[in-house]
Length: 128
Image 1: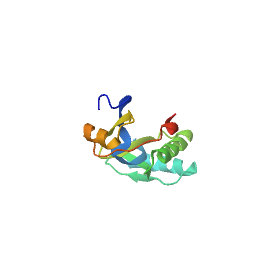
Image 2 (image 1 turned 30 degrees about the vertical axis):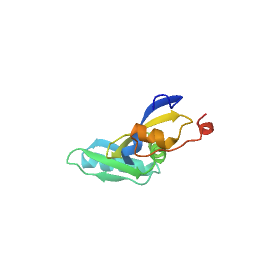
Image 3 (image 1 turned 60 degrees about the vertical axis):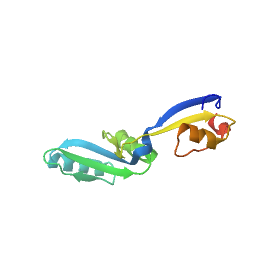
Image 4 (image 1 turned 90 degrees about the vertical axis):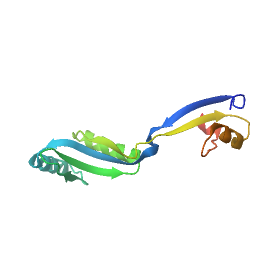
């Protein structure tokens, strides 16, 4: 690729291996503490919760989302209501790496030189 690109950079897409985002209150104590917390959540007008029983250390699940943005909105609404909700990504944990290149060369030649399995062209005007 040397000499074929006017600018190149490498970036990691950390969310690439994540399939869902869970919002939860982990480690809330015993079952009675978890049930009391669920009652407070319901009293605050929040729905969509489930107690995950794990012996003496229970977790309250507060939703599972395909979109990070929707999960963050749910988390923010719970935090705003006084509940320390956490966002937990789920998936295979593998990142996707990209080589961003500005060039006038044929993309197929660069793709072969980089050993890339696929390529995607971007409108540079949209990146400004």
